[in-house]
Length: 156
Image (cartoon, rainbow, N blue to C red; front, side, top):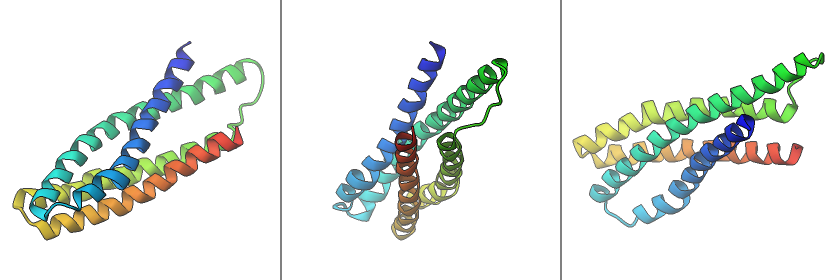
């Protein structure tokens, strides 16, 4: 039962992360582009700040639940007298997931910090540049997330 609960938390956290990126990239940003920079930059700063806080929680849940589930399967396999070989799709999922987490770290702790400084200083051109960089890296993370989901579902 605990495995099923952790798998549910794992999937829900991924839905928050991937779904939030889809929403921000394809819906929020295009709508915000209708606004002048003095309205757009603070709006995106506030929305992304809330989203990035949720992603931090999602990352902790994904990492903890993923490691626990892998560990549990490995332990049960070894206790049954067999050698544990992590399936290829799990290996790809874990490796790309770590890459996504590192990219998010760059987005949150470098690029978003630039956006925060620009929003506070009301430097709209610097804010727009920071948002463009964030958009690029979120796009990369979104592609990686979709690749992980596709590989995991197609190889299962």
